[in-house]
Amino acid sequence: AISARLAYNWRSDFLLTVRDVIVPFAPIMNEATGQLDGSLFYTVNPKMKIGVQGVNLLNETTMTSQVLNDELLKTGRSWFMNDRRYTFVVRASF
Image (tube, rainbow, N blue to C red; front, side):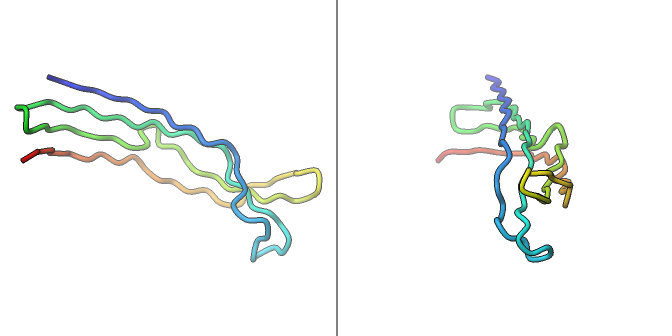
């Protein structure tokens, strides 16, 4: 038997810190981002499966921003490229 799974996870903006160490009193926000993950498995027998898993299939970049004023005007602060990752998996039960 073959099983497949796709999952899209979304995280809206959230506060990382209320006070940055580089620019005092400036909050740092993590911007909203989504990530698509997936897996494909083949059941060899009732006790063994083989498959492949993929993480961050859309190659999303995580961005943080710095709040500049009381009107919540923001500017980009840092960007993190997490890359796609693929894993070959063997699952066995004894």
